Image (cartoon, rainbow, N blue to C red; front, side, top):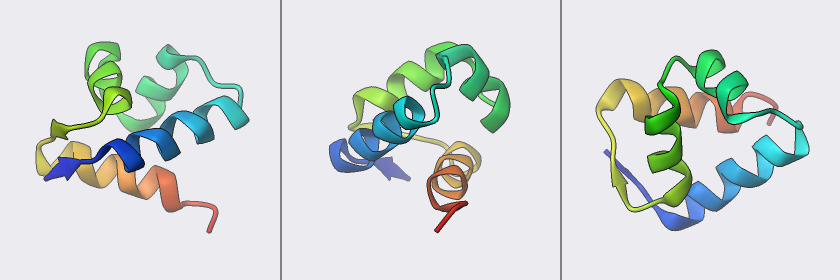
Length: 62
């Protein structure tokens, strides 16, 4: 599954709005800080589990 630059931007904005550190968010969604950095850069081909965690977190308060 592919995380686009637009999805990465939304991810970064939500993290900033919630005032979470990279470490806090990485623990919350179950990834490492290195993987979180890849997610936030965008253009990342994520494994299905990671992609699902990211999308679930992005849409949890919609």
